[in-house]
Image 1 (tube, rainbow, N blue to C red):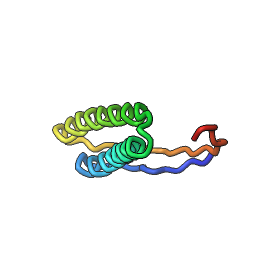
Image 2 (cartoon, rainbow, N blue to C red):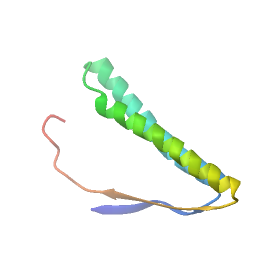
Image 3 (tube, rainbow, N blue to C red):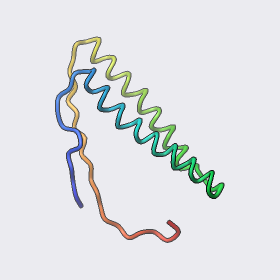
Image 4 (cartoon, rainbow, N blue to C red):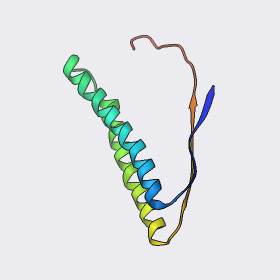
Length: 94
C-alpha cells in the first residue's frame, strides 16, 4: 500500500472552500463523464456513477454547512486528507 498526504494543514473557511469543493467537484465531473460515456457507448448500467454523484452532492452540502459555521464563528479548519493506493488484480469484466 502507498500513502500520500493530499491535504494537510490549517485553512481559513475561504481556503478550505476552494480546496474541498475543487476536489469534490472534480470527482462529480469524473463520475458524470463516466456515466455519459457508458450511456453513449453501450447504453450500460450507470447506477454506480449516479449513486456516487448523489453522495458527492450531499458531501458538498454537508461541507458547506461546516464551512459556513466556521466562517460565522471566525474559526479555522484543520484538514487532513490522506490517500491510500493499493495495487490489486484487475477484476474480470472490467
